Image (cartoon, rainbow, N blue to C red; front, side, top):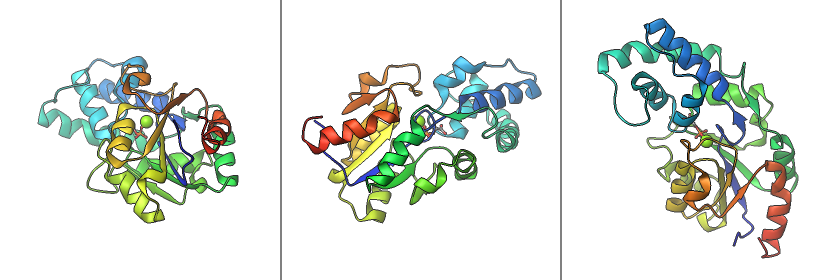
Length: 229
Ligand SMILES: O=C(O)COP(=O)(O)O
Ligand SMILES: [Mg+2]
């Protein structure tokens, strides 16, 4: 059963923003420049979630697990970074219900933080491009701290920043990394059904609740406050 939290941390890719169209465009373009086969958007959708460096490695080997040749990676990575800097938000967009959900959370007085595995140089422009940045009092990106999700470090960092006990905190995400990080941090976890989870239904990771739109958050949190969610 969900308990009403004091603080809510929200993931970016697959939760707030459908960012795969730009990530996939850059993956395809990088491979074209390297004279290698383009992965296409459905594959990239399965590879997002562990930061841009992992995405580039997965693109180079054409699968989720494994490592590319070091020399190939060293050649490809700067190409991807340059492409993504120019194509962070051109094809991406916030999911329906995101603005509504954030507006409710803000008005209801929740402390709001953003925790993503996306590198800071891309997170901030992406959130700003869609008017999402100002909802958050703190944004922790994939390279802000020594460790990123599924490690609990970024979640615990924000809990400390707000002076909130982990048991009073809720993470909203879309992937098994969000669930693992939240469980390890002692947070509650709600997941979006529409996000990226390496091609696996997020319900298999047993989050506390799964919702189809952030516009469902008002009802969910009101139920939690009544002890009924
Ligand atoms: O950059 C990524 O791989 C995804 O980041 P997320 O933590 O916002 O889903
Ligand atoms: Mg995500």
